[in-house]
Length: 319
Image 1 (spheres, rainbow, N blue to C red):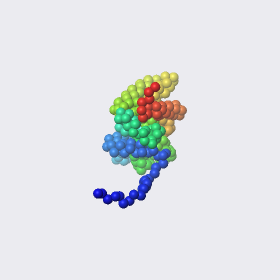
Image 2 (cartoon, one colour; image 1 turned 30 degrees about the vertical axis):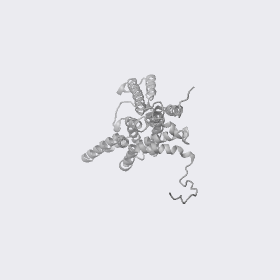
Image 3 (cartoon, rainbow, N blue to C red; image 1 turned 135 degrees about the vertical axis):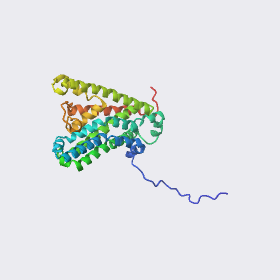
Image 4 (cartoon, rainbow, N blue to C red; image 1 turned 90 degrees about the horizontal axis):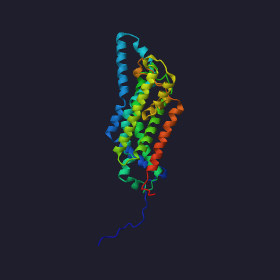
């Protein structure tokens, strides 16, 4: 006959008690763990540095040639460079990389839960819909922010150390603040939009394909508007045609990457310049007004979150 248990006293839970306001953090931590352990995430983050790496190599070669020949070409070149334009160019040229990064970590964020009926598990526990959505959004926002910050802050630190004598810091005392605002806004925008698209599907692959198709179709439209702008401006001759040029320059920003580029131009306070600061007569599309850059981003982000709110439910509602 087995001996009776000697200790019959009641033992309560002695672990950590988290606040109800932090339920979303449990959902977010799982998303962060899944994102940061993917090798492809770090590959895309490093690959987003490609423009900055090419620019650093280009400047290094120019500097060495100038030193060898004893000419002042280095001073002339570096003195004419707008450093905030280089951040804008690097941000613009990395849009495809960040699209891939967003699809990698966010396409299946809600779609896979829909397909596996995981929402029945999430929402049957003491987790509210707002906790679930906030956790999913934060779980996507932070990896996107890290992926954008890796190349951007790498170049900023490199510039502070190596280009200070060429006005890297003195050109704009608030450059770091503007750069951080640029990537913060872009990460918020993409996280909200991808989350909304993901909620429409039951498979992450389908959500990713839909988002990518929308991205490339709208980018194709933006490229057409860019061509129309150049035609209206007279190509490299700079002969302006006011109304058509104005319309094309506004429609250029009606795409996923266009909205982010418009936001970056407004935050940095520049229309941009050719890559590497090289002189060119090709006109640059001017930055949109603040409201025309901010309002569409806010509306699209809010629309994505509202769509996710409407789609997330534990059971089918029969009307």
